[in-house]
Amino acid sequence: MEENNVLRGKQKRYLRAHAHAMHPLFSVGKNGLTSAWLEQLTGALENRELIKINLQQSAEATVEETKNFIEQGTDIQVVQTIGRVLVLYRPATNEENQRISSVVENM
Image (cartoon, rainbow, N blue to C red):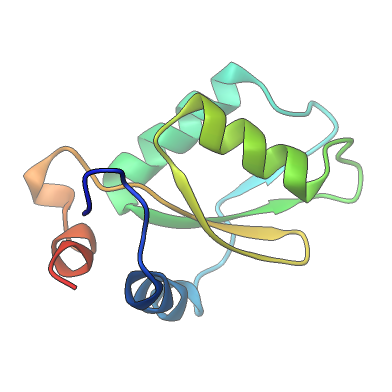
């Protein structure tokens, strides 16, 4: 990863391709965006490094608000948004969980 943690185009393409067959793990619903929800996201990303989330129809937050909330409060990066689905990436700190980040780092 670069020092400023910005993904390059090649890295984003790799992550998008990897996330293509995934199903969303988390949803944003009527409870909205909370710090507890953000902590759960961070925990899931520690184990998986790459996940999808979706915004339910009942969610009051927009895709852009959700993206900003995630990126401002954490070191999680939004790789892609498609409709109401966001693809999130965060390198794992535990070496055992670094399956994707080790490849992305060397691109």
